[in-house]
Structures are given as C-alpha cells and as structure tokens.
Length: 178
Image (cartoon, rainbow, N blue to C red):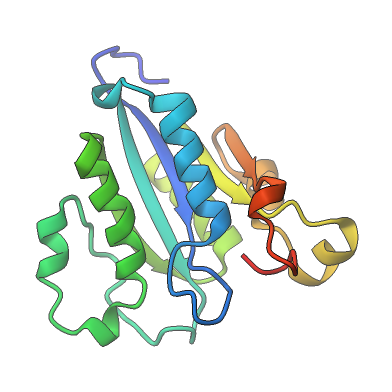
C-alpha cells in the first residue's frame, strides 16, 4: 500500500471480451470481478481508489496497432476515428464510462500478447496495490485444455491477487464459454 495515505489505492483489473459468439461485450468473469470490486472494495469511498483496466488482445485476434494509448475519460474514446480498428476499445469504454458515472478515477489501456505474461509484466511496470481478475471456475479437465490466467497471475504477479469466481447463476451451459 502507498505510504502516503492521501494517495488512492491503485487496483488493476484485467478485462477481456466474451468468448461467446454474438456477444461483443465484456466477459462474464471480468464484469463479475469489476462489480465485486465496486461493491466490496470501493463501496462509497470513490475518491480513495484508482482503477487500472488492462485488456490484453491475443496476437492476430484483432489486427490492431494502437496498443499504448491511455484512456482516462469518456471524451478520449470520441477521438478514435476508425471504429473497425477499435475492437478492444469498446470494452475499455464500458469500464471507463462506468467509473466516470460513479466518480472513480481510472485509466485503461490495451496490450497485445499472451494474457498471462502481459498481465504480470504490466503489474511489474505499473505497481498497483493489488490485481483483480475474473475466474471462470473451470474444473481440472477443462483447465488442461483452456488454461487459466487467474491461477498463473496468482502465482507470478508481483502484487496481491484476488481472483473472483463466477456465480453458478452466471455460468453458461458450456463452462468454457465466458
């Protein structure tokens, strides 16, 4: 935690798009992690926190090269001219808009690569007070084939990590979907 008590607590939230076809929105897991952070950590202390949203695009998924831009207000998204290039930006826009609605300071950015490695690298680079990730709650059989970003980050990120599981009510018919 920051030694200066006037500094906000910095929470990195890793966000990703849903894997379900026809569902171009935030995944169930990352929305759950975001909602949990708002309801259980921030509560009404909106000035005491700063959220850092990181979206990692898998290479060749989006063909998009504006990786190091930082977005801190709803107006920043209006500057994006080519919406086709901005597939990952609509995801960040959702979270930035929500933060501005409730008065929580935030930043959001996109990186490209292996989500597990990039999240841990960005934690090391930005040094948040802790990292919040969504977890699909996959069983051992599914984990072998799908892999799990939350477990990797829990073991390797250089800060405390909170992995938020989906509730049973949020789990799609196929638990690999998110």
